[in-house]
Each structure stands twice: as C-alpha cells, then as structure tokens.
Amino acid sequence: MVQAYILIQTEVGKAANVAGQISGIPGVTQAEDVTGPYDVIVRAEARNVDELGKLVVAKIQGVEGITRTLTCPIVHI
Image (cartoon, rainbow, N blue to C red):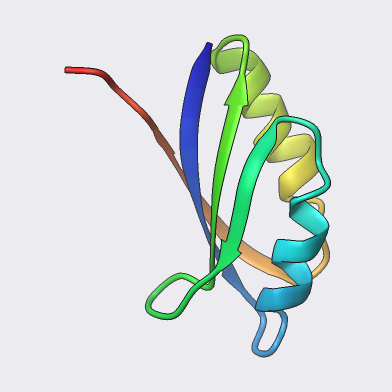
C-alpha cells in the first residue's frame, strides 16, 4: 500500500468546493481545505505507485478549480 499527501492550489474561492468533490473519490482518505501556500491537502492511498499516479492525474487533477498539485509520498524511515 502506498500513501501520499497531495498539496493542491485552487482558483480563488474554490478550496471548499474542491475539497468536497475530492473527498468522494475512491482512494482519498481525507481532504481538508487549509490556509497558506496550498488551499487543499489530501491524504490518499493506492496499491502501488502507478495506481497512485493514475488517481492523481485521472481523478484528482480532473476536478474543476484545481490549478496545481504536488504529490508527496509517505515514507517510513
């Protein structure tokens, strides 16, 4: 299982709507609108890195109002 945080920038005023839409996507375990340089932070999981990439590119980045994403895989050191 691969887990990651996905940091999202949105169009002005779209953070709450984006977080709400993303929270319903399978593989997303949490989506919160936040303040700071990013507008939404998502925690997601997938079976492997390829599936995580497909989740981000095909599902999450397709949500209207997103301008940029940064995927940060979780590592256990």
